Amino acid sequence: MTQRGATLVEFVVVVPTVLFLLLNLIQYGLLYHAKSQLNYAAFEAARAGTTQHADPTAIRTAFARAMTGYYGGGTTTAELAASYAKALADTTPAQVRIEILSPTKESFDDYHSPALAARLKTSARVMPNTNLAFLDCPADVPSCNHDPKTNRSGQTLLDANLLKLRIIWGIPPNKQIPLAGRFMNWALSVLNEGDTDAFRQGLIAAGRIPVVTHVVMRMQSPAIEAGNASLPGPGNGGEPEDPGSPPGPGGEPLPRCEVTDPGCTRPPKTEPPGDLEPICDPATGNCPDKPDCIDLTPMP
Image (cartoon, rainbow, N blue to C red):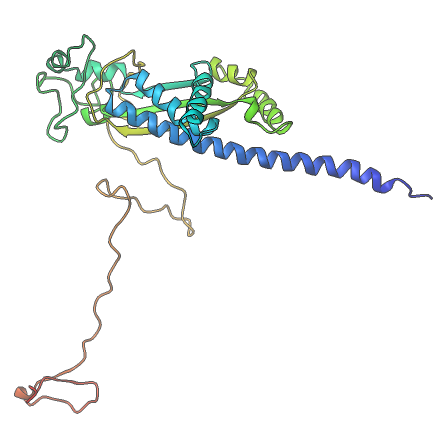
């Protein structure tokens, strides 16, 4: 029987498959790069928010500025300006959703300081940010409900001063590998068919690949309410909970860290000292004749 053409058939079957896998590997590499850039931009956005009263406009402006590198960057003022313009055009509310998860509307319900709002000359509600180690309530509202088990926010004043952001952004089609990017987008549309989030569905419909990041940072200025989302409820009753950890090699759960040691940097265990070498004291006349005996006889 003739075998002519068998090699060509194998080539037609194998090469496209290998090429498709290779393109997807490259796409995953670009996805990792995009996620790294998004994490950095989220950090810059949160830092701007902590120093500018959790202002949504300041947060979004800082995010777009930090994304300049992803859209080309540059070494001159003109190049940076062009890349920044691209970042601004591609990070509008249609492509990026920035959610302030904390402080919430209920945080301001519990810890609004009218005196501080008057000092800052704003009609919006304000939360204090100083002397938090010594305050449970705003100084001008000492009778506030600061118990997270029963108040509206489920937060202490310290918790309410944590700025928490969730940012969802879609990788644009022109930043995707041909074929691999479209395949990933199609796979997401199938896997998330039941997703009721219109924004994520809109990103996928526009050919974008959604990427999500979270960031938490301590407020460095008094937070001013600006249409914050509502998230009522005591949560876990105001008690910190260990999310758990996978079992160790022996099947036992890993040891928990103390609340005062979030980095789990416990000092290393020290072994008890062993037997000391025998000491020779001529005054007692009790000096065994051993080569390892330490002689305390004064030197002349």
